[in-house]
Length: 72
Figure: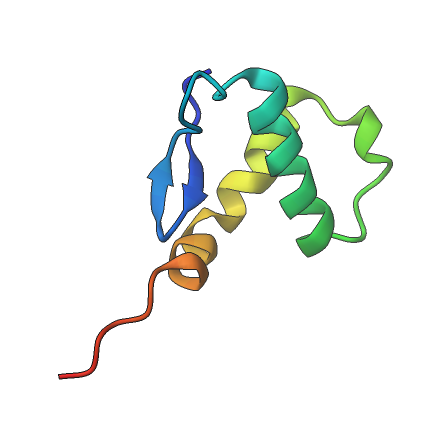
């Protein structure tokens, strides 16, 4: 699976061979269900639709999951 997830403020892959279509799409589904609660039954979404909705969240996820900046 080539599509990265957003973790720790950056695009990332699940380590240890875990970056499979099932694991990636499952994590994407959890996130889009949280943010887009008006979507139809998630079981009817295609892989392309899952990536489309997740990509719409990508910028906010980078900001929200970024490590806190250290005070100077």
